[in-house]
Image (cartoon, rainbow, N blue to C red):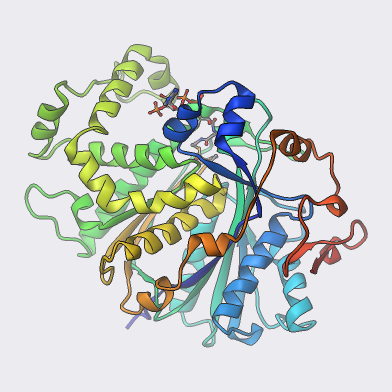
Length: 461
Ligand code: CAA
């Protein structure tokens, strides 16, 4: 029998500084309603000068280990997935281990292994799955794996990406007989294509972004991976479809990549349209909307040609908005997605960590509604620009309450300090050094010195 493997627990680290959407909207001359409803952001977490993605990763990992009473000898692998890399060669997990060994002792992780993974925002999902398979293959000698997803999403000042910034890390514990969620085996599905929707050339601090192209590519890529997932789920007997049913009826929750809250809502709308279009229920949806679904001039055309078909794009936008107003969409949205978006609205984009912060948000806020989550299936839509999508699913395990009942997002984020626009812009321009941080460290890893051996830059303060 194949061991049951999945996510046993997770811990988060969010920087203690944030930017409020109202201050931001006023400074940039944007309607605050656009940010609150059009994007879905209220607070964006901003990293202080004494924190980088490795410090955040180490902080999340330390929390995960402490709350589970884990020692380095219990861990066989430490992976870090990020797109905020510090070195072209030295992997971020080595920095993280360097920091953890300040607590657990020099060489305490020497028996373990791991690498840094990169593929924009999707690499954490690959890292998790590959580690789950390492345990399934029983090469783990009874040890667990930790995968840390950590990123700082920083865009050019004044750009449309600026209101989709954020920073933070999630550390996830992978092991046999997990308490939170067991992966559904044999169904993960991926797509990959050479694309330039969002990328960050060497040495450049902020990405080059093709905004509308990236949005559409995300939707199409996740949909294609979802089609492949569906094929496998039916073929392996994981999901049995009756007449008139959609595979979305067999997924109790959706957790997708969240560059911003609204993107989750749009991704759900896109998937439901795609899945329901050929089912009997669609005629009821169309009746409620009161218009036919528009067709692009060239349905098999490239993403560029679809985006250039302005007549279709306009009609499709109108149709999508109307669909998102229907009782059909809203029922699924409220029941299966809304809880996963709560954290995104008060933290912002975390790139690799976004979907996993969403998973945590989903578990905590559904539990707080008093819903029994045992046996419920979560479907994941992970997306990384460049581009690759990964769709997979998992089942919430009987022992989930032990972990989820202790979750408290506000407490876990901790007290935060609001930045003025002036302070934020100074931070954005890198005008303050690590010694001149906005707030002082509070029992966490921070940068304490510069230069020389970069692995030794951080300390626990
Ligand atoms: N009140 C309410 N809503 C308003 C409004 C108002 N006054 N004014 C505008 N809006 C709405 C718009 O109608 C729109 O809503 P819909 O999506 O429902 O149409 C929404 O606000 C956004 O406005 P725009 O369409 O004008 O978009 P924008 O120019 O603000 O750009 C963006 C949005 C393209 C996402 C941009 O922020 C961006 O480039 N972000 C970075 C790239 C990104 O996140 N891409 C996502 C996919 S790629 C990915 O996922 C990888 C990753 O993590 C980067």
